[in-house]
Image 1: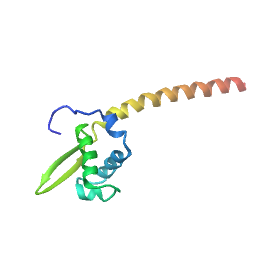
Image 2: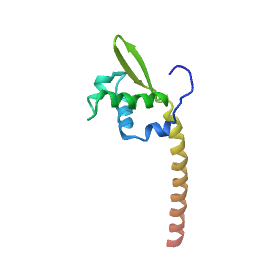
Image 3: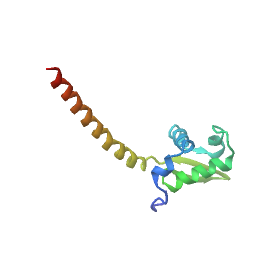
Image 4: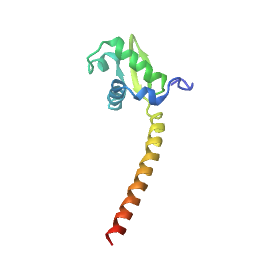
Length: 109
């Protein structure tokens, strides 16, 4: 990222299954060129490139030119926002299930 604030919401960016798969593919490598990423999909380079642009706008992907090739790299730090949001609900459900378990044990006695 170039130090500017992302222009797209991270939740919107990860809402699409193709973009989630791109993130998974990029998590497994240091960086990857467009043609290697396109290989994993039943769509053309232009469509994959559009998905990568959305991920880039959300700050989830960075890119750099190497000759005529553009290489893409995962920037997972914006995913922390999603992790924090999910963690809140994890605590919420844990507390509810713990209370339910307590009520069931009291009922058994």
